[in-house]
Image (cartoon, rainbow, N blue to C red; front, side):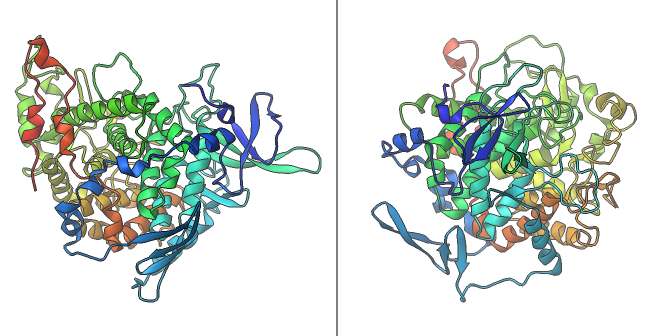
Length: 608
């Protein structure tokens, strides 16, 4: 896709200038920082005038359309008064907005005196202070939060940058508090970074890649003049030089959350934002050699950004991919230029949901089935489609899996199943309804049954169990940071609390989240908000853990706010989309070779 000149590929951006400037002889600076972020390039403004179709008319969000199933009442057990936003228009200009129980002023929701205010604990008060101190400003406006703000850290490496994935819990905390400006600025500035130059050893990845992080730098123009620029990292400076596959997926998810929580859908409708969504989707949906609907990625391309044996089709990427597909389907303007993309999104959603539900799911029945697998089957209707050898079932799993629980595999490839439990992927599968309602219940049943293993003294294990001995040496390359029960190798990460909370609230089991949150609150403030904890039970602060880690703080605050605002929480997850089960593009029935097996997915749906 050819981009207009305003989105020419560059690396750094700087404000208020009309001339390109050379930086390090390789990167260009272009004017793109506006104090008022509602200013659009000329090509956007001209095209926007021709748009008469509202995105919201074409939204097929299950959360919005299935209001008759009393989703919110099921989550919280009551029927509260919703937050109603009414805009008063005068021609092209919005002259006022009102909110039941409060008033919107700018991007902040000012609550009325009648609004009940929950008293904050000392830990919450300190957490808000830390989060506000972590805010990064660019041209005087807030654009994100640094990864960590430890005053005792003399070598911050890249922890002084704004990471897209790290900012998500911070963004939700601000949105749930009624502060939308920082999130809007973040979304627009990272969008501007999307199309710019990213090269490693003379090779550039496809258009649409979002940066892993960015930093605000001050550059000298001459002896007396300096200005701020945004310096993004697309992976060319990262350890291992890995492109951040999850960044674009998180960006789309956050864009939807911004609209849902603020009621401001105008951001989604902007031409530049629509173009950004399309670029990410086109990059993810590009044709390749893969036979599966899952995204094929390298090791270290998501939250687990070091070598941990997750290359291939890791669950975390698939659950975020599925969520981003559903978000894009809601937000994309339906017209002649997007029809093919929307059709491709629908087809991929259908194929991906079936693939994950059918082949990634393991419980005691499925493990027994794998235990009795025949191998080397050459047939279109083989039972052991991926030629999995029963000897791959690890000994620990036989006694660990509970009778009433189950989970989604960490990875699936030909002749390989990764039986580790990966927390983020399973939680986000619940949140996005990638897994079936019955599977969602079973995942939470497993968490409850294996509380000491996954929660322990500090929630939550990033994966379980740890790689040890020869597995650690071979799979991680003897990584000294990912030693057993530390960091990404089954360390405990408090930031995962907000995703656990959202999953529990969706399934009507907030008491599990409250229990985990109370456990974390006892220690986090006293321990100075570490990034992660070590040991099998999460008893000790991580040996290389940064203190005052922003997404630890934000994950804690977001969990608190979600539990206190169940109506808002209900806007952030998806219910089952039954239309997906009726979409099939495999064409197998037409070929006469075999009947389509997609009907099997319907048998797993628990109709509530």
